[in-house]
Length: 236
Image (cartoon, rainbow, N blue to C red; front, side):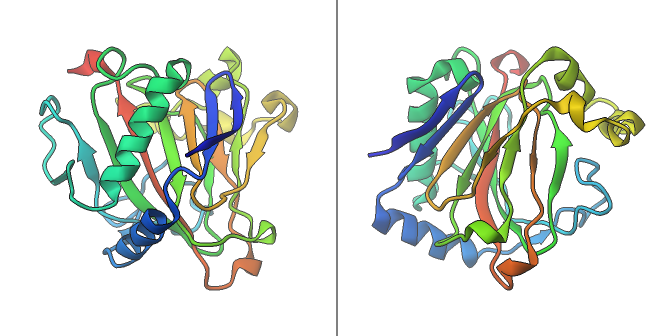
């Protein structure tokens, strides 16, 4: 039974999301999958040039009505990923103020496994308005506080949200120069969420966030997660 670790406007953190045996099986399954650099096809400008080389696996889709016509691995996968997707849907239903309500605000989910090795990070950004929000579920079996990789979530004030918006319609707008010049004081106070195993984080689309760099202390350990988005129902 999951338990609330943190809840506030546009942010929810749940711990002990999957049963221990299911969590272990999911980790075994994920680490056997193929991964590629996030820049394998082209530079994904959500990551700065100094953000290292995160790795991503194949996308998985929950789209029961086929509204988006995605091609690839889809729910039900007949793996423990189905249990995770079910848990994400339950969290959304229990706390609709965070990422909205299934069938009303969003109708599908797309997700992928991610590996962040030593030296990798993700710069401050806000997700596209075409999504109601995002989620991250940590699947590594253990994580040390000295290893870094915390998720930092900033306030959802309009000024900050507009500055760090990533736009899908214009690639040049995905990495604005003013982002490089932002003063620390403009960001306010962020919440630091350690990547605790079996932890699920839901974030509303108006909350800027970033992934802190994985520290050298992590050695060969990787920050492993399954992360994804809730596309708006209005896009269908």
